[in-house]
Image 1: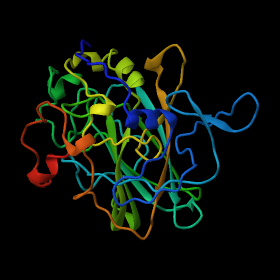
Image 2: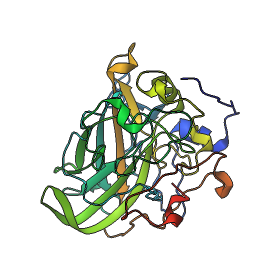
Image 3: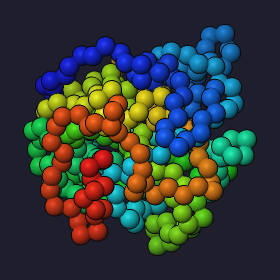
Image 4: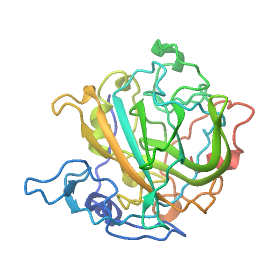
Length: 317
């Protein structure tokens, strides 16, 4: 795609992200030292040092970070299905996502039975349930991708954590929409149960967003079908929600399936440190770039379903 990018000097926030440092968001308590974005590879000396998304290494110490909650955004829908594969035939670069949920109040033990819910846009910036919303720039209409996806359910789903607190999703790397960077929304629920193909009851302990390294995202956006959406992509430093901090800020560790061919897909990993006694539905979550000002650009427009969040929530998408 042809994009208008403005190169910036690396900010302190971005430097922290690249270094895998932990920065707690407002109201969050951080326990430093755990590299929540470590890959499963060790260094040549066998020390267990892990490679972060930027290529730097940080030794894992076994400690974890209480993740900073942020807004759920304007595109949430109730009733997502419990399933591993959420693509429904939507085209894009494959992403195998592994999320581990840890209890930061109990020696970082796994939260078995936690229901992890994710949702994100397709390769052109469209969300299921909101397919009339303009993603900004120039993109084909959502229904021109040739998929048979259900326009109310694609790229949304739950998985229930196993005894190790782990869930796995099969999806695609999201595209982008103005004025946001590439991201995946996530909620962690506890105390509910599977019913009628979805997850009901309980409470939401954590609402957050997962992010992608700029270099990887921009490389992917040159590939089909992403390249058919042209315009200005928002980088991490300019995003209104990403606050930096690497592990604590939601930056995924991404490992290519094939080192020379990004179209083959990526494996994404992250550890979410939560407080199972907390409750945070994201409706009034934090977020906001440096100074709390969003970057310039026109937010998505279009008629959402009748059960969409209030307009005030969309201001901090």
